[in-house]
Length: 366
Ligand code: FAD
Image 1 (cartoon, rainbow, N blue to C red):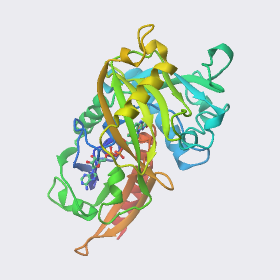
Image 2: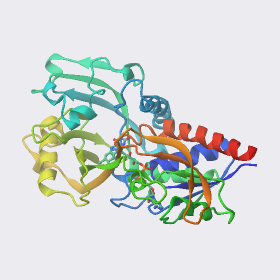
Image 3: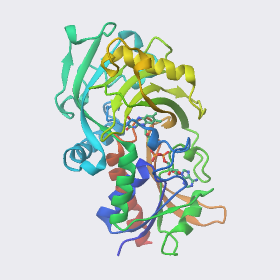
């Protein structure tokens, strides 16, 4: 028969989870969200992501499993589903030894290893040496990954949800248990899946103090870099980074960035934007016509997004939460995806689906 489920949130986590449940479980699903694909808002991380898949999970952690399970799905979309807006990219990751203990260096620690766990997962992995290394770099690896045009992919996921019978509605809840009254059937939901990202810091009934923002600032340009490139750090500060990726299907090239812990500022910082553009052209001179510097970049727009970082990593757990009115609601959480929400999206949704099925079976026995 299927159960009544409300998925709270329409970022990459909510949409992928709703789609996974709708495809496999035959449930009746409503997505409720304050922000939807098409919106650009500081409370909505998903549109701001690059987005690419550069594995950063430490070996042996649940996140490693989520990244491992997600890659084949992204690869399939890039190969077989052009309308998803995902394409393959030649990728270079550069390492500077001096970045080892900086915040960006820590973030990239697994990625820049000479012998990383993902070398047999992502295609064409090889070490880059000698004359292929730009000045100042101590090592590098090359492999094939993907870049996702989030302006196409989020609507694609929404369309897939609609195709599989999911009902999508706007709504804002103060306390998570309120979502149980918002199922499209008019009946109380049997379960809520919480995919509210960084907002779970303040959402009533959750208020997870392990969450914090990892601010990312980007510049989107029309120029073609020819390669997807990142470095383990910069000389402009320990929380600044260089990454360059061209989105599929005319989505522009994303220049990043930074990982600023606990910074909530929604407006782009113009001097940081200048540093981002200058560093991108230094690393990837083919971005601009010969002899031109950053003034050779054709800017589409500047942007800021807040990565939903979480001490302890992504939270995929189930619990029963009691509302202010005393009502008890079964909840499965899937939030706290930091800077890796796309590259873990399918693995996380599969893990959440398992907990949803466990919770529903337990409920049926009562
Ligand atoms: P969000 O996208 O923030 O969505 C949250 C949803 O919950 C929204 O729909 C919101 O409206 C809704 N919501 C919240 N509170 C309520 C409420 N009370 N009531 C109703 N609705 C509510 N990841 C990668 O994998 N690869 C990358 O290359 C990459 N690059 C990034 C670059 C930048 C600059 C940034 C900022 C992030 C990047 N990320 C990347 C990370 C990725 O964007 C996030 O991990 C991911 O988008 C989180 O998705 P989410 O669905 O959990 O949260």
